[in-house]
Length: 159
Picture 1 (cartoon, rainbow, N blue to C red):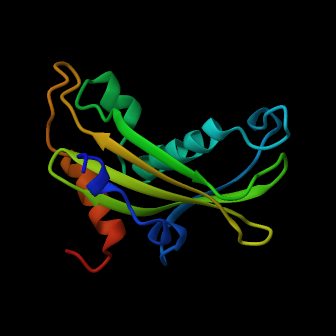
Picture 2: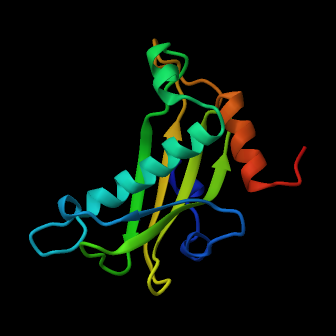
């Protein structure tokens, strides 16, 4: 088993939206679809990234400042997506952060994309971020502010 295999969420877990999931609603834009008229696969990864950036902003983590000040980096080590149903131009979707698995120097975040009109889950995404010193790229612990935000979100009873 590779290192990333043990960090992957079960697809059933990703397909379930927990109460209080952090989510954004958006519309599939014309520039999001390919020549076949369906959402281009890489756009769904962008949707997930947008949720991560918004989650950080809501928790007072300004990623632009983090990067500008070279406080830490979070490159993607592994990403996978399961495309279950197509999305087309004009579809309204909810992109939700539905899971977070934290280790000392990495975090796997799970996302669920669902069509708002009928609730159909269309895409499941998981992204493994490795946290590094932004200057040396040596691994470092998950930043405290992000770890605390993810813990508080995933377990609201945690102190």
